[in-house]
Length: 432
View (cartoon, rainbow, N blue to C red):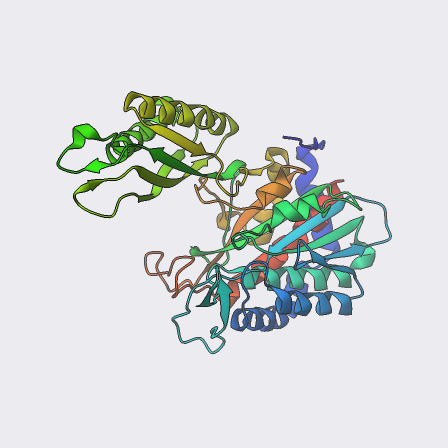
């Protein structure tokens, strides 16, 4: 994994950040833009579009960025939008990223701006909803773009605003998202020095920011195992090579990769079978069983170990049962670890503490969910943080989860996101 090296004196970061804050009142600018941010969020929420189908969303974003006088490129990775703000002053290139796609979920709440949109997902007509907060991500980045454009003369370098499609995964048979944007050169011309992203979180109080250095979200590697046996009558199992029993042994053995082979005190990992299919009658032992699963890892060594161990166990168990097995790993896509560059995280910690307050800047444990922001971080140092979206009068237990029909985050949470994106940019430029 290629990573640029950051060089700076940490002892001077707080003073640099304070000086930057003294020159530009980001709090006031964020207050001024907040009504627009809320308006944009409500529009995106009411009119969501699925992955690789964000045509009207992209047009809305591109039109606004163009109105700011930015150099705007459309059609990146199919529907992505990229805009460049050139301050005219020498300095680094900072990238800020937001994702644009909704999910095939039917919204169930009474918001005035709730979605009633429909879309096509894998050949079926489905309801569409921003059930993960990408509507807020776009609105926050547009707010930061407005602020940074307004103080263009104070900047040192360039800002690249990246509005990414298909974070939730491209439709079957298609490619999309951050991986395609990187392949198409989104981090080049001009070359990005650091990238920042954030995610609204329905279980974190409005006004708080969560962060972690190093492995922050897991790599994801789906896999498929097809076991070929010999069909027989269920009453005469000795005439079969039973793929069902073989599958059962594989499932139990696969679980020992994590529980007995990995050093779990370092980082968590998961190997889960999510689907198993085989046979069609109670009295017929089938000739084939298919299983689909997922691997989640938070460090490179664990990921490499599972890639070695899984085929070894699958093939050995199949051979011991007289069966044959086909393992496809990864299956159809693969995300790297969302890895927050430790030096960049350390450099931006004073920024987070100044922006949200030290008491509201929370060190967070890694999670085994995944994010394709990781493809950007494979190429340049990146920082990805969580911004609170839970109303203060709602308990964490009562707050609807992401990817559910009841999902909700408070508009008030977006102001902190706008300020963080703006201050990350200003402080990084001041430090470099």
